[in-house]
Amino acid sequence: QVQLVQSGAEVKNPGASVKVSCKASGYTFTGYYMHWVRQAPGQGLEWMGWIIPNNGGTNYAQKFQGRVTMTRDTSSGTAYMELSRLKSDDTAVYYCAREAIRGSGSFYNYWGQGTLVTVSS
Amino acid sequence: DIQMTQSPSTLSASVGDRVTITCRASQSINIWLAWYQQKPGKAPKLLIYRASTLESGVPSRFSGSGSGTEFTLTIGSLQPDDFATYYCQQYNINSAFGQGTKVEVK
Image (cartoon, rainbow over all chains, first blue to last red; front, side):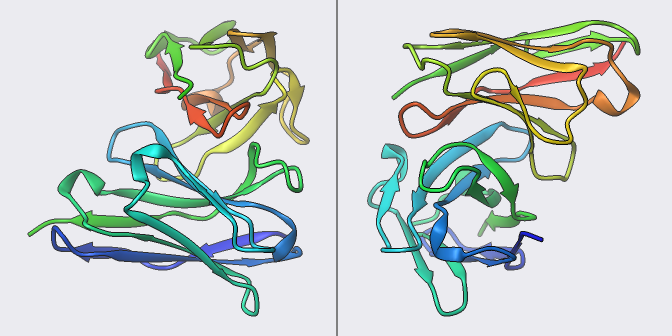
């Protein structure tokens, strides 16, 4: 069965960077776009961007361009999201989510369990 | 960027009620809209995609309709497990979510 397992919670100082991992299993990792979505405490869902595991191509939401980097390691089936120059309002749960339809960059039928990133001095 | 607006933000209802949530897009998104249910501390769960297609395993009391800029999610007869927050998502151009609708106990 498809599983997305994310790395554990992080606490970071303002100005630092954080790198969250998402290990995929149960399907062909290179076949489906992986998206990243975040959710601040008590707030809604915010799309950050996607990566094409097959070739490393990326598409970032304008809000995060210049601060986010999405990468992947095809040998381990793991996607990564790194966010730099962290601010307090980056405190959120970060989710990886796999697209439902191969190569469409569309909606998501599998999600990771979420990784809480807390930015605080 | 396409903006998604849901209404209401909170909805108070009782078991057995028919519930309708509306989602509006700032420009036409054709039928490229999905609905999710989220419970506290959990990842969202896909309910409906392509505006009206029910995801496998989702109860038939959930239905979606609409196209262009206006969409609705209807729960035909609210069940105890349905108290949760619901989000719409457009995937016509990149992706964007509505702000959510919390369905609470009346």
